[in-house]
Length: 332
Ligand code: BEZ
Image (cartoon, rainbow, N blue to C red; front, side, top):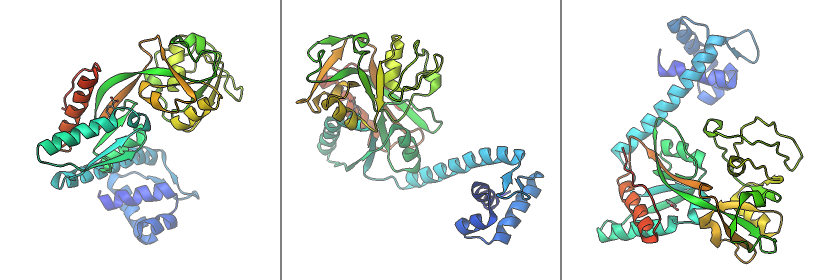
């Protein structure tokens, strides 16, 4: 069995056609057909049922496809990591989700740059706005060297450091009756339209509590009592047994704050967002100490850009200057 045969099999299975696979691989149809036959003969199993159009995987072929495609992706990751080990990039490429840019990221980078220039080794930093989930793929392909996000990811290639938990605040239109109430409770907010903006939902396995009431969404669909609540803001309410009266889902945090400013509803945002649109929005603390949003650092396990330990020191330095509590961690 060799790589050519495996790649031919994956292309035929993906496109369900010899002619389409020939076009994308640049091989002739007879060559593809020969490679597939050799592979099947080597392992003694028919992988593709040639009698159906479009072509179908056999049951064994489906199993083989799942395992082999995962192995080929791993092989790509290993190849790109090996290339980076032999020629590491000079610049530090940082992926981030927008909500951390409004917070301490600019100050952390300034601290890192000051530290580097004190050591007479200037550093070039590139910033890329990229979702938590996509950061994991971008780390593997080498597009970024480090990612900051708000979701935990379990992946054999990735190491994750929990930096801190940031408290949520409630964002209300300035004219809202509760706009001047200092310490707010989630239960008092339940009668409002809650604007949801997260694109990545929590994996169902991390949810320990589900909503105890049916939830009526904007289109009035009724969700089952037993369905776990995976949307992060609804999950926070559900921890207290509360379902907001109505919800509206938007594409990102900026749009959510725009709707709050326009008086369309309320939302919860990490405290560092409190500087946005302050003429139209009132931000107030929540009394619940555990209504927080985590900030994670993700990087590869086997390849750490040489500047990353300095970046972690810069993060902790900023936390100390601002009196933020954290638990220092190290790379493995
Ligand atoms: C923070 O706000 O704690 C933070 C933001 C960006 C990167 C690292 C930490």
